Amino acid sequence: MGKEKVILLLHGYPQTSYAWRFVTPLLAKQGYKIIAPDLPGLGDAPTPASFDKKTIAAIIHDTMTTHGYNDIYLVGHDWGASVAYSYAAQFGQEIKKLVLIDVPPVGEYLEKLPLLPRNNKALWWFSFHQVNDLPELLTEGKERAYLQWFYHNSSFKKDVFDDNTINEYYRSYSQRGKMSNGFNYYRTILQDIDDNKVFGIHPLQMPVLAIGGEHGLGQLAYTITKPLAIDLTGAIIPDCGHYVQEEQPELLAKELVQFFSK
Image (tube, rainbow, N blue to C red; front, side):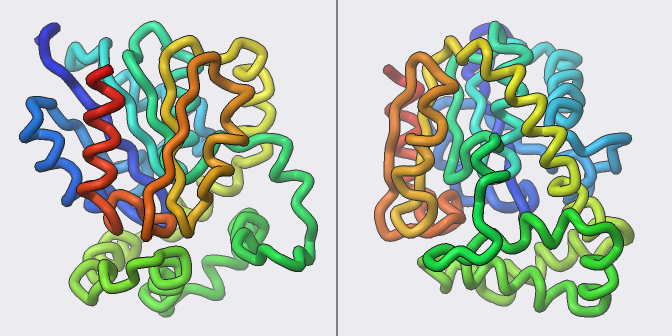
């Protein structure tokens, strides 16, 4: 098992491990063993005691080490990227290389975002999802429409999110408690910021690749991550919004293989 080239893929919100369905076979063809779990509390995974990313990372780490996976390539998208950063910050000696896709680790920069930005209204839900009970109240019975808004407004290649894809995500998030669990990932942001302040005292030592979608976070994926890693590379995926692994799976897989092969 020690000779296996293992990649751990961590998805984001509002998605599940289903998000990696196009990328997984492309990486497997290159000889990698792929592990792509649902994040704790999402998809078909049980609800954790806490949703702070330090705890979520520790839960996933426990599962990985139980199965003997302690020398891995780690890839995270969206909240999965935040979890991946926390994983690497806590257990860096077990990570060969780290990839963060279209979301940098949360930090104090989020606290400085204006309430009424002129040029960027894209992060309104970061505040909305932190409100207790109200998101659940307003989305009950409208889960599919709410999820669809994110897929269509944060993507560039919108045809990727056809009815079958949206139905699969709706199946997962319409399970009891799953919408709340998704919101709970946001309700720990302030704790995550505090934890990341401590992690950031010691920049990551392993090679890190920060990827942004051309029409997603773009260059900011690299810029915001730069102080947190001593060996950081940036890449931008063209013709792509936020959901890089679904909008441009071939280009993403190519970037990953090139980075891991260096």
